[in-house]
Amino acid sequence: MEIVIVGANHAGISAAMTILGHYTGHNVTMFEMDDNVSFVGADALLRLAGKIDSESSMWYSSPEKLQSKGVKLHMQTEVTAVDLKAKTVTGTAKSCESVVKHYDKLILATGSSARKLGVTGADAENVLTLKTAHDAKKLFKYADSPATRAIAIVGTGHIGVELAIALSIQKQKSADKFENRKIMLFGRSARSLKEHVDDIFATKIDDLLTENGVELHYGENLVAFQDDGKTLVTDSGKYAVDVTVISAGFVANSELLAGEIQRLEGSNVYIVNSAQQTSNADVYAVGDVASSYMNVTGENASIQLGSYATRSGIIAGHNAVTDNKYAKSIGTQGSSSINAYGFIVSTTGLTFGAAQATFSKRNIEVSKTDFTALVKPKYLVGDENAEVTVRLVFETESKRLLGACIASTYDISSALHMLSLAINQNMTLYDLRYVDMFFSPWQNQVYNFVLRAAARGAEGK
Ligand SMILES: Cc1cc2nc3c(=O)[nH]c(=O)nc-3n(C[C@H](O)[C@H](O)[C@H](O)COP(=O)(O)OP(=O)(O)OC[C@H]3O[C@@H](n4cnc5c(N)ncnc54)[C@H](O)[C@@H]3O)c2cc1C
Image 1 (cartoon, rainbow, N blue to C red):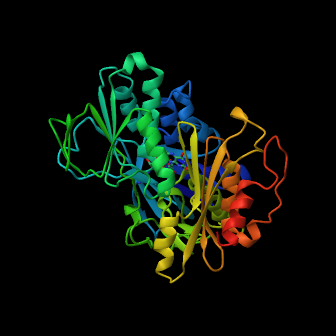
Image 2 (cartoon, helix red, strand yellow; image 1 turned 60 degrees about the horizontal axis):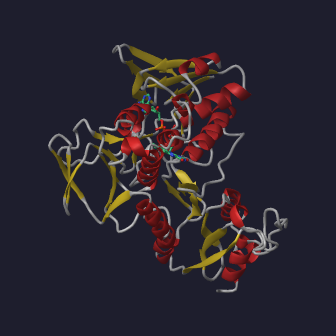
Image 3 (cartoon, rainbow, N blue to C red; image 1 turned 135 degrees about the horizontal axis):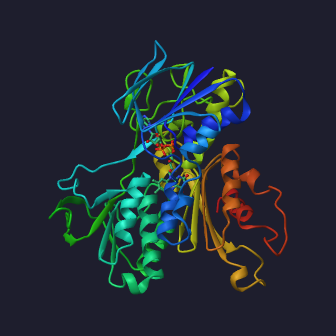
């Protein structure tokens, strides 16, 4: 079978490696318009914060590695047309040469691009975005230079906040070099992470940003850039900046088959079923360009996470060569996590705010319970132990779990993964409060914070 994959980043690579690693007798051809593959955006933030020694850690594969696994790879070749009837894709190389390739199955892994803000002056050289390896390299040049005295970040979503954290850690680590540097974070909302976490957690993260030297400009709207990007103008003031990073989200790269393959209104991702198959049976979509089925709401959404990119790539890879017999997606909770100077906030499912907004339209009342406890028994003190706060969001009457957020300086990611599974399995707080969890004072209380929070919620507290 001829399998063509458009896009050779996380989702595309995952699909290709699944096919070539599990099956024989198939040809996998990949088209990638960029000059590199497998760039991990999150690692660019680690690099800024000085957490990785070598920039090469930001990639886990390369064109050579993909070719050595058997991929027929067309680098720096943009797929500019797909003929769904003739089952061909046309790639246009940097040299302007065209390649036409027939497919039996097509996997669209074209991902997303950084959203640009159409304000005056945003095309200046020092107004950046952060999505690709080229973006990261440009940013490193500014961030590593002591001549950069003022950095602005516009956007207080996950990436904007994480970037502010990384830059402030970089400044702290090389205080002599960046002593007088200003790091400013701009956002329209009165607080950060509006779409990601509820107020109680965002407030703590915002306090930590301030404590760590990030100047917060919340409730300000970007209006324009002046003086070749050296002045950032909001509706509240003008700021001298050396560089600005616009972090305003990502737009699905789905124009290629707009009008021909069904897309999700609002986000424009290709709508896929549990096999990652689009409205055209021979075409699959994966990663940032594909919809994701949210178990909590029973609706498709765009979640744009590397975890989904990899998982959906594996599912599509198996299905493309087994006629959908092998793998089924079990939906998603959109779990994510942010580490603010060691205070880790992890979420799964819906925030309380999002649950209220969604379920009020269905006349379903939602509730929350907040619970704070020590991770381990209180007689264990010091670094070995820490407070953890958990919020559970649930349907008031049925007690079905809709979302969870856990925050602590102790890494309790595994509890969050477990809560993601609980939502996936449609569990109620009545079930959750009696789940078997081990007791060992080295690691856990006898009746731990998740069980106690679930018990409180189940009892209507
Ligand atoms: C700074 C940063 C930090 C992040 N941190 C996290 C994190 O901590 N956890 C997490 O889960 N996610 C994180 N993400 C999100 C994650 O990186 C994305 O969800 C992921 O990259 C999506 O992978 P993808 O392969 O679907 O798409 P992309 O990474 O967007 O890749 C798509 C590829 O397709 C190519 N392409 C597009 N159109 C064409 C065409 N017509 N022809 C040929 N090639 C084409 C592009 O050049 C690109 O290489 C982060 C993202 C960024 C930018």
